[in-house]
Image (cartoon, rainbow, N blue to C red; front, side, top):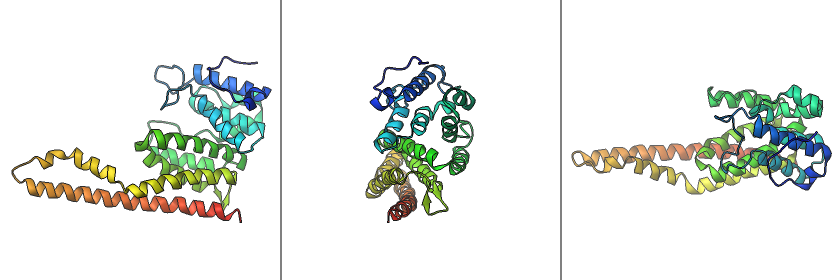
Length: 270
């Protein structure tokens, strides 16, 4: 049975496989007509470019395919990976339609805490613990999801990327088995870590100069005061300098984490 779907470019490896095409059609339909995360109940769109949301799952599946993954169950789960989280589709429904393995992988890719009203720190910690319990095949799909999301967010939402990239580094850390063995596909894992390394290398060169300038401009009223102006000016400079040094120190620590992950992953090739 095939379902109505948004008009997007469908890669041949999906179109030419009966199961993958059916899974794609169902996922596209669910994101368009059964979405639970839009305020008006309308179609689910990608946040930054407002494309039909199914473009993202297709991109995740394509990353897997181009990397050489041919397990149709992993590819199907990539197409379905946000359906349980963002629509009213259930794991039981997926199990009935597409089988136990595809449903289980999709379940493993679904956040256990997606409550937008709860603390983000708590949500992310609970979801990291959930990811740590998944099998290598599930985490390989998760890694492809990370790769596509990281590319979008670092390019299109630099403000959010500051915290997002660190959260992903912590997630990649739990995707190591016994602290030394990557649980997901090594090549994809290395690619995901390399994205973070490149992000931090660029940020290290900037040393938060933009944030410092923004802070000073945001307090430009202090520069205009005439009575007591000099000491107000010095206070503003001191606060900005402290902010700058704290931010640079935090950046250094975060960079050390991703370089350590890169070292562990690279050593596994030897």
